[in-house]
Image (cartoon, rainbow, N blue to C red; front, side, top):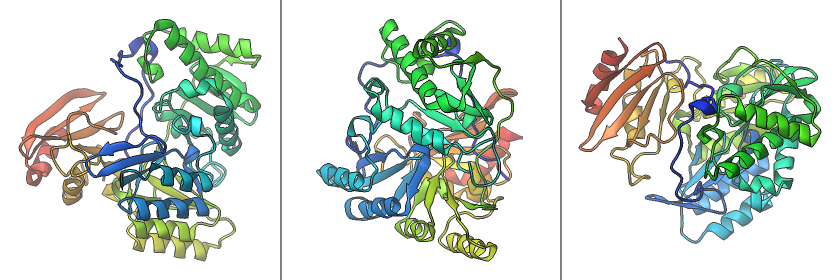
Length: 427
Protein backbone atom coordinates (compact mmCIF):
# COMPACT_ATOMS: atom_id res chain seq x y z
CA UNK A 1 0.00 0.00 0.00
CA UNK A 2 1.07 3.59 -0.60
CA UNK A 3 1.88 5.97 2.19
CA UNK A 4 0.11 9.30 2.41
CA UNK A 5 1.31 12.19 0.27
CA UNK A 6 4.50 13.44 1.97
CA UNK A 7 5.30 16.65 3.72
CA UNK A 8 8.52 18.39 4.60
CA UNK A 9 9.74 21.48 6.38
CA UNK A 10 10.88 24.35 4.13
CA UNK A 11 14.57 25.06 3.60
CA UNK A 12 16.26 27.69 5.71
CA UNK A 13 16.67 31.04 4.01
CA UNK A 14 20.37 30.35 3.53
CA UNK A 15 19.36 27.36 1.39
CA UNK A 16 16.72 29.27 -0.54
CA UNK A 17 16.64 29.45 -4.28
CA UNK A 18 15.98 32.96 -5.58
CA UNK A 19 12.90 33.27 -7.76
CA UNK A 20 12.83 35.47 -10.83
CA UNK A 21 9.72 37.53 -10.12
CA UNK A 22 9.36 39.94 -13.02
CA UNK A 23 5.68 40.54 -12.40
CA UNK A 24 3.25 40.91 -9.53
CA UNK A 25 1.60 37.96 -7.86
CA UNK A 26 -1.11 36.63 -10.19
CA UNK A 27 -2.37 33.94 -7.81
CA UNK A 28 -6.12 33.58 -8.40
CA UNK A 29 -8.76 34.36 -5.83
CA UNK A 30 -12.46 35.00 -5.87
CA UNK A 31 -12.15 38.61 -7.01
CA UNK A 32 -9.32 37.90 -9.44
CA UNK A 33 -10.20 34.95 -11.66
CA UNK A 34 -7.71 32.95 -13.69
CA UNK A 35 -8.49 32.04 -17.30
CA UNK A 36 -7.93 28.33 -18.03
CA UNK A 37 -8.77 26.16 -21.02
CA UNK A 38 -11.97 24.95 -19.34
CA UNK A 39 -13.13 28.44 -18.41
CA UNK A 40 -12.37 30.84 -15.59
CA UNK A 41 -11.07 29.56 -12.24
CA UNK A 42 -11.75 30.97 -8.77
CA UNK A 43 -9.85 29.98 -5.63
CA UNK A 44 -11.84 30.45 -2.44
CA UNK A 45 -9.72 30.83 0.69
CA UNK A 46 -11.10 28.95 3.69
CA UNK A 47 -8.91 29.55 6.75
CA UNK A 48 -8.44 26.20 8.47
CA UNK A 49 -10.57 24.65 5.72
CA UNK A 50 -13.63 25.45 7.83
CA UNK A 51 -17.10 25.77 6.30
CA UNK A 52 -20.54 25.91 7.88
CA UNK A 53 -23.32 23.87 6.29
CA UNK A 54 -24.85 27.05 4.83
CA UNK A 55 -21.51 28.08 3.35
CA UNK A 56 -21.03 24.62 1.86
CA UNK A 57 -24.44 24.81 0.23
CA UNK A 58 -23.67 28.28 -1.14
CA UNK A 59 -20.42 27.04 -2.68
CA UNK A 60 -22.14 24.02 -4.19
CA UNK A 61 -24.87 26.18 -5.67
CA UNK A 62 -22.28 28.56 -7.16
CA UNK A 63 -20.38 25.65 -8.72
CA UNK A 64 -23.55 24.31 -10.34
CA UNK A 65 -24.94 27.61 -11.60
CA UNK A 66 -21.72 29.33 -12.61
CA UNK A 67 -19.13 26.59 -13.15
CA UNK A 68 -18.67 22.94 -14.06
CA UNK A 69 -20.55 21.71 -10.97
CA UNK A 70 -17.50 20.16 -9.28
CA UNK A 71 -15.51 21.50 -6.34
CA UNK A 72 -11.76 21.02 -6.39
CA UNK A 73 -9.81 20.80 -3.11
CA UNK A 74 -6.31 22.28 -2.94
CA UNK A 75 -3.27 21.29 -0.90
CA UNK A 76 -4.04 24.16 1.46
CA UNK A 77 -7.57 23.13 2.32
CA UNK A 78 -9.05 25.73 -0.02
CA UNK A 79 -11.62 25.21 -2.80
CA UNK A 80 -11.41 25.97 -6.50
CA UNK A 81 -14.39 26.48 -8.78
CA UNK A 82 -13.59 25.71 -12.43
CA UNK A 83 -15.35 26.14 -15.75
CA UNK A 84 -16.74 29.52 -14.73
CA UNK A 85 -18.40 31.59 -17.43
CA UNK A 86 -16.73 34.83 -18.44
CA UNK A 87 -18.30 37.81 -16.73
CA UNK A 88 -19.63 35.92 -13.69
CA UNK A 89 -17.11 37.44 -11.27
CA UNK A 90 -19.47 39.99 -9.75
CA UNK A 91 -22.22 37.42 -9.20
CA UNK A 92 -19.78 34.94 -7.65
CA UNK A 93 -18.39 37.59 -5.31
CA UNK A 94 -21.90 38.55 -4.22
CA UNK A 95 -22.77 34.91 -3.46
CA UNK A 96 -19.62 34.35 -1.42
CA UNK A 97 -19.97 37.68 0.38
CA UNK A 98 -23.55 36.84 1.39
CA UNK A 99 -22.33 33.50 2.74
CA UNK A 100 -19.69 35.16 4.92
CA UNK A 101 -16.79 33.85 2.83
CA UNK A 102 -15.41 37.31 1.99
CA UNK A 103 -14.91 39.07 5.33
CA UNK A 104 -12.43 41.46 3.71
CA UNK A 105 -12.26 42.04 -0.02
CA UNK A 106 -8.79 43.59 0.36
CA UNK A 107 -7.42 40.47 2.10
CA UNK A 108 -9.25 37.64 0.34
CA UNK A 109 -6.14 36.17 -1.35
CA UNK A 110 -3.88 36.36 1.74
CA UNK A 111 -6.15 34.38 4.09
CA UNK A 112 -4.06 31.23 3.59
CA UNK A 113 -4.16 29.42 6.92
CA UNK A 114 -4.00 25.68 7.50
CA UNK A 115 -4.84 24.23 10.92
CA UNK A 116 -4.79 20.75 12.45
CA UNK A 117 -8.08 19.31 11.12
CA UNK A 118 -8.86 17.14 14.15
CA UNK A 119 -7.99 19.79 16.72
CA UNK A 120 -10.49 19.82 19.55
CA UNK A 121 -12.29 16.73 18.23
CA UNK A 122 -10.33 13.54 18.88
CA UNK A 123 -8.48 14.25 22.10
CA UNK A 124 -5.17 14.45 20.25
CA UNK A 125 -2.82 17.41 20.23
CA UNK A 126 -2.05 19.67 23.15
CA UNK A 127 -4.82 22.24 22.71
CA UNK A 128 -7.67 23.27 20.45
CA UNK A 129 -6.26 25.75 17.93
CA UNK A 130 -9.63 27.04 16.74
CA UNK A 131 -9.35 30.20 18.88
CA UNK A 132 -5.94 30.82 17.28
CA UNK A 133 -7.47 30.40 13.84
CA UNK A 134 -10.25 32.90 14.51
CA UNK A 135 -7.84 35.41 16.02
CA UNK A 136 -5.25 35.14 13.23
CA UNK A 137 -7.83 35.51 10.46
CA UNK A 138 -9.25 38.59 12.19
CA UNK A 139 -5.74 40.04 12.68
CA UNK A 140 -4.89 39.49 9.00
CA UNK A 141 -8.09 41.13 7.82
CA UNK A 142 -7.46 44.13 10.11
CA UNK A 143 -3.88 44.69 8.94
CA UNK A 144 -3.20 47.09 6.08
CA UNK A 145 0.36 45.77 5.92
CA UNK A 146 -0.86 42.19 5.36
CA UNK A 147 -2.31 43.16 1.99
CA UNK A 148 1.28 43.15 0.76
CA UNK A 149 1.54 39.37 1.22
CA UNK A 150 1.28 37.21 -1.87
CA UNK A 151 -1.50 34.74 -2.48
CA UNK A 152 1.09 31.99 -1.94
CA UNK A 153 2.20 32.99 1.57
CA UNK A 154 1.05 30.35 4.07
CA UNK A 155 0.37 30.22 7.82
CA UNK A 156 0.09 26.94 9.75
CA UNK A 157 -1.50 26.45 13.17
CA UNK A 158 -0.57 23.09 14.67
CA UNK A 159 -2.19 21.75 17.84
CA UNK A 160 1.01 19.96 18.84
CA UNK A 161 0.56 16.69 16.97
CA UNK A 162 2.88 17.83 14.17
CA UNK A 163 0.58 17.45 11.16
CA UNK A 164 0.35 20.89 9.57
CA UNK A 165 3.72 21.86 11.09
CA UNK A 166 5.25 19.66 8.39
CA UNK A 167 3.61 21.41 5.43
CA UNK A 168 6.36 23.93 4.75
CA UNK A 169 4.37 27.00 5.75
CA UNK A 170 6.04 30.39 5.80
CA UNK A 171 4.90 31.01 9.37
CA UNK A 172 4.22 28.08 11.71
CA UNK A 173 2.72 28.20 15.19
CA UNK A 174 2.78 24.90 17.09
CA UNK A 175 1.35 24.23 20.53
CA UNK A 176 4.03 23.09 22.95
CA UNK A 177 2.06 23.30 26.20
CA UNK A 178 -1.29 24.43 27.45
CA UNK A 179 0.01 27.97 27.85
CA UNK A 180 2.65 28.21 25.14
CA UNK A 181 3.39 27.94 21.44
CA UNK A 182 6.50 27.63 19.28
CA UNK A 183 6.86 30.13 16.43
CA UNK A 184 8.88 29.80 13.26
CA UNK A 185 10.58 31.74 11.84
CA UNK A 186 11.99 33.05 15.07
CA UNK A 187 12.43 29.67 16.78
CA UNK A 188 10.90 31.13 19.91
CA UNK A 189 8.24 30.26 22.41
CA UNK A 190 5.41 32.76 22.89
CA UNK A 191 2.38 32.80 25.14
CA UNK A 192 -0.69 31.07 23.74
CA UNK A 193 -2.61 34.32 23.91
CA UNK A 194 -0.07 36.07 21.70
CA UNK A 195 -0.05 33.59 18.80
CA UNK A 196 -2.08 35.68 16.34
CA UNK A 197 -0.05 38.84 16.99
CA UNK A 198 3.21 36.89 16.82
CA UNK A 199 2.33 35.15 13.55
CA UNK A 200 1.34 38.46 11.96
CA UNK A 201 4.54 40.08 13.24
CA UNK A 202 6.58 37.30 11.60
CA UNK A 203 4.80 37.93 8.29
CA UNK A 204 5.44 41.65 8.57
CA UNK A 205 9.13 40.97 9.28
CA UNK A 206 9.24 39.03 6.01
CA UNK A 207 7.71 41.95 4.12
CA UNK A 208 10.27 44.31 5.64
CA UNK A 209 13.12 41.97 4.66
CA UNK A 210 11.84 41.66 1.10
CA UNK A 211 11.59 45.43 0.76
CA UNK A 212 15.09 45.96 2.17
CA UNK A 213 16.44 43.55 -0.45
CA UNK A 214 14.43 45.15 -3.21
CA UNK A 215 13.11 41.65 -3.87
CA UNK A 216 9.74 40.64 -5.24
CA UNK A 217 9.57 37.55 -3.04
CA UNK A 218 6.34 35.66 -2.50
CA UNK A 219 7.58 33.15 0.10
CA UNK A 220 10.10 33.36 2.94
CA UNK A 221 12.11 30.58 1.29
CA UNK A 222 12.79 32.94 -1.64
CA UNK A 223 14.72 35.45 0.48
CA UNK A 224 18.49 35.18 0.27
CA UNK A 225 19.51 35.74 3.89
CA UNK A 226 22.38 34.44 6.01
CA UNK A 227 21.64 31.45 8.24
CA UNK A 228 19.54 32.55 11.22
CA UNK A 229 18.94 36.07 9.91
CA UNK A 230 15.19 35.64 9.44
CA UNK A 231 14.93 34.30 12.99
CA UNK A 232 16.73 37.39 14.26
CA UNK A 233 14.49 39.72 12.28
CA UNK A 234 11.38 38.07 13.70
CA UNK A 235 12.69 38.28 17.26
CA UNK A 236 13.46 41.96 16.78
CA UNK A 237 9.96 42.52 15.46
CA UNK A 238 8.41 40.70 18.41
CA UNK A 239 10.41 42.86 20.79
CA UNK A 240 9.31 46.02 18.99
CA UNK A 241 5.68 44.89 19.22
CA UNK A 242 6.01 44.13 22.94
CA UNK A 243 5.35 40.42 22.45
CA UNK A 244 7.20 38.36 25.05
CA UNK A 245 9.27 35.47 23.72
CA UNK A 246 12.21 33.21 24.50
CA UNK A 247 14.39 31.06 22.29
CA UNK A 248 13.18 27.48 22.04
CA UNK A 249 14.20 24.43 19.99
CA UNK A 250 11.90 23.08 17.32
CA UNK A 251 9.47 20.49 18.75
CA UNK A 252 10.14 16.94 17.65
CA UNK A 253 7.67 14.64 15.95
CA UNK A 254 5.79 14.92 12.69
CA UNK A 255 2.62 13.12 11.66
CA UNK A 256 0.62 12.88 8.45
CA UNK A 257 -2.92 14.15 8.21
CA UNK A 258 -5.99 12.21 9.33
CA UNK A 259 -6.65 8.93 7.56
CA UNK A 260 -10.17 7.78 6.65
CA UNK A 261 -12.10 6.48 9.61
CA UNK A 262 -14.43 7.27 12.48
CA UNK A 263 -12.73 8.85 15.47
CA UNK A 264 -14.15 10.17 18.69
CA UNK A 265 -16.10 13.28 17.80
CA UNK A 266 -15.61 13.18 14.02
CA UNK A 267 -15.22 11.15 10.88
CA UNK A 268 -12.65 11.54 8.12
CA UNK A 269 -12.90 10.75 4.40
CA UNK A 270 -10.52 11.20 1.49
CA UNK A 271 -11.41 12.77 -1.88
CA UNK A 272 -9.78 10.99 -4.87
CA UNK A 273 -7.57 13.55 -6.66
CA UNK A 274 -9.31 16.29 -4.69
CA UNK A 275 -12.31 16.46 -7.02
CA UNK A 276 -15.79 16.45 -5.50
CA UNK A 277 -18.82 15.99 -7.73
CA UNK A 278 -21.98 17.98 -7.06
CA UNK A 279 -23.58 14.85 -5.58
CA UNK A 280 -20.66 14.23 -3.23
CA UNK A 281 -20.57 17.85 -2.11
CA UNK A 282 -24.33 17.83 -1.50
CA UNK A 283 -23.97 14.66 0.58
CA UNK A 284 -21.27 16.29 2.71
CA UNK A 285 -23.42 19.37 3.25
CA UNK A 286 -26.37 17.11 4.11
CA UNK A 287 -24.52 15.18 6.84
CA UNK A 288 -22.86 18.32 8.22
CA UNK A 289 -23.91 18.86 11.83
CA UNK A 290 -21.92 21.98 12.69
CA UNK A 291 -19.24 22.44 10.04
CA UNK A 292 -16.94 20.77 7.53
CA UNK A 293 -13.15 20.90 7.75
CA UNK A 294 -11.34 20.50 4.44
CA UNK A 295 -7.81 19.22 4.92
CA UNK A 296 -4.51 20.00 3.13
CA UNK A 297 -4.39 16.29 2.22
CA UNK A 298 -7.52 16.64 0.08
CA UNK A 299 -9.77 15.08 2.65
CA UNK A 300 -12.78 16.18 4.67
CA UNK A 301 -13.31 15.96 8.43
CA UNK A 302 -16.93 16.02 9.57
CA UNK A 303 -17.44 16.87 13.26
CA UNK A 304 -20.27 14.72 14.63
CA UNK A 305 -21.51 16.76 17.55
CA UNK A 306 -23.51 14.47 19.86
CA UNK A 307 -24.13 11.76 17.26
CA UNK A 308 -24.20 8.20 18.55
CA UNK A 309 -21.80 5.51 17.36
CA UNK A 310 -24.57 4.02 15.23
CA UNK A 311 -25.34 7.39 13.64
CA UNK A 312 -21.63 7.96 12.95
CA UNK A 313 -21.34 4.56 11.26
CA UNK A 314 -24.41 5.26 9.14
CA UNK A 315 -23.06 8.66 8.05
CA UNK A 316 -19.68 7.13 7.23
CA UNK A 317 -21.36 4.49 5.09
CA UNK A 318 -23.38 7.12 3.22
CA UNK A 319 -20.23 9.04 2.34
CA UNK A 320 -18.57 5.85 1.14
CA UNK A 321 -21.58 5.07 -1.03
CA UNK A 322 -21.21 8.54 -2.58
CA UNK A 323 -17.73 7.62 -3.80
CA UNK A 324 -15.59 9.14 -1.06
CA UNK A 325 -12.71 7.04 0.28
CA UNK A 326 -13.47 5.46 3.65
CA UNK A 327 -10.87 2.67 3.53
CA UNK A 328 -7.63 3.68 5.35
CA UNK A 329 -5.68 1.24 3.16
CA UNK A 330 -6.96 2.63 -0.15
CA UNK A 331 -4.24 3.34 -2.74
CA UNK A 332 -5.99 6.64 -3.46
CA UNK A 333 -4.36 8.04 -0.31
CA UNK A 334 -0.98 8.02 -2.03
CA UNK A 335 -2.01 9.31 -5.48
CA UNK A 336 -2.23 12.94 -6.53
CA UNK A 337 -2.44 14.83 -9.80
CA UNK A 338 -2.62 18.29 -11.27
CA UNK A 339 -5.70 19.20 -13.32
CA UNK A 340 -4.09 18.17 -16.66
CA UNK A 341 -6.08 18.17 -19.86
CA UNK A 342 -8.58 19.48 -20.83
CA UNK A 343 -8.44 22.15 -18.13
CA UNK A 344 -4.84 23.24 -18.66
CA UNK A 345 -3.44 24.29 -22.03
CA UNK A 346 0.12 23.45 -21.01
CA UNK A 347 -0.69 19.84 -20.08
CA UNK A 348 0.31 17.03 -22.46
CA UNK A 349 -2.16 14.46 -21.12
CA UNK A 350 -5.35 13.87 -19.17
CA UNK A 351 -3.36 12.92 -16.08
CA UNK A 352 -6.37 12.44 -13.82
CA UNK A 353 -7.86 9.85 -16.15
CA UNK A 354 -4.52 8.07 -16.50
CA UNK A 355 -3.98 8.14 -12.73
CA UNK A 356 -7.37 6.51 -12.20
CA UNK A 357 -6.72 3.86 -14.85
CA UNK A 358 -3.32 3.12 -13.30
CA UNK A 359 -4.49 3.07 -9.67
CA UNK A 360 -3.98 -0.67 -9.26
CA UNK A 361 -0.42 -0.36 -10.59
CA UNK A 362 0.47 2.19 -7.92
CA UNK A 363 -0.70 0.02 -5.02
CA UNK A 364 2.27 -1.40 -3.16
CA UNK A 365 4.84 0.98 -4.65
CA UNK A 366 5.81 2.23 -1.20
CA UNK A 367 6.08 5.88 -2.22
CA UNK A 368 3.35 8.38 -3.01
CA UNK A 369 2.84 8.94 -6.73
CA UNK A 370 2.10 12.35 -8.25
CA UNK A 371 0.97 12.82 -11.86
CA UNK A 372 1.83 16.07 -13.65
CA UNK A 373 0.67 17.22 -17.07
CA UNK A 374 3.89 19.11 -17.81
CA UNK A 375 7.29 20.02 -16.40
CA UNK A 376 5.82 22.71 -14.14
CA UNK A 377 4.50 19.92 -11.87
CA UNK A 378 1.89 22.21 -10.31
CA UNK A 379 0.84 21.13 -6.83
CA UNK A 380 3.50 18.44 -6.50
CA UNK A 381 4.21 17.40 -2.90
CA UNK A 382 7.36 17.90 -0.89
CA UNK A 383 9.41 15.02 0.40
CA UNK A 384 9.92 11.54 -0.98
CA UNK A 385 7.58 10.67 -3.84
CA UNK A 386 7.39 9.42 -7.40
CA UNK A 387 6.94 11.94 -10.21
CA UNK A 388 4.99 10.81 -13.26
CA UNK A 389 5.36 13.68 -15.73
CA UNK A 390 3.58 13.75 -19.09
CA UNK A 391 5.78 14.39 -22.12
CA UNK A 392 4.87 15.50 -25.65
CA UNK A 393 3.68 12.60 -27.76
CA UNK A 394 1.62 10.74 -25.18
CA UNK A 395 4.35 9.32 -22.95
CA UNK A 396 5.40 9.84 -19.35
CA UNK A 397 8.74 10.29 -17.62
CA UNK A 398 8.72 8.41 -14.32
CA UNK A 399 11.25 9.28 -11.64
CA UNK A 400 11.77 8.97 -7.91
CA UNK A 401 14.11 10.95 -5.70
CA UNK A 402 14.37 10.27 -1.98
CA UNK A 403 16.55 11.61 0.78
CA UNK A 404 18.46 8.36 1.16
CA UNK A 405 19.17 7.41 -2.45
CA UNK A 406 19.86 8.90 -5.85
CA UNK A 407 17.12 9.85 -8.25
CA UNK A 408 16.17 7.07 -10.64
CA UNK A 409 14.37 7.79 -13.90
CA UNK A 410 12.60 5.85 -16.63
CA UNK A 411 12.70 8.28 -19.59
CA UNK A 412 9.29 7.56 -21.10
CA UNK A 413 6.46 5.11 -20.66
CA UNK A 414 3.00 4.75 -22.15
CA UNK A 415 0.24 4.71 -19.52
CA UNK A 416 -0.08 0.94 -20.02
CA UNK A 417 3.56 0.53 -18.96
CA UNK A 418 3.40 2.59 -15.78
CA UNK A 419 3.45 -0.51 -13.55
CA UNK A 420 6.78 -1.65 -15.04
CA UNK A 421 8.22 1.86 -14.81
CA UNK A 422 7.24 2.19 -11.17
CA UNK A 423 8.75 -1.18 -10.37
CA UNK A 424 12.00 -0.21 -12.12
CA UNK A 425 12.57 2.96 -10.13
CA UNK A 426 11.44 1.74 -6.69
CA UNK A 427 13.04 -1.71 -6.64
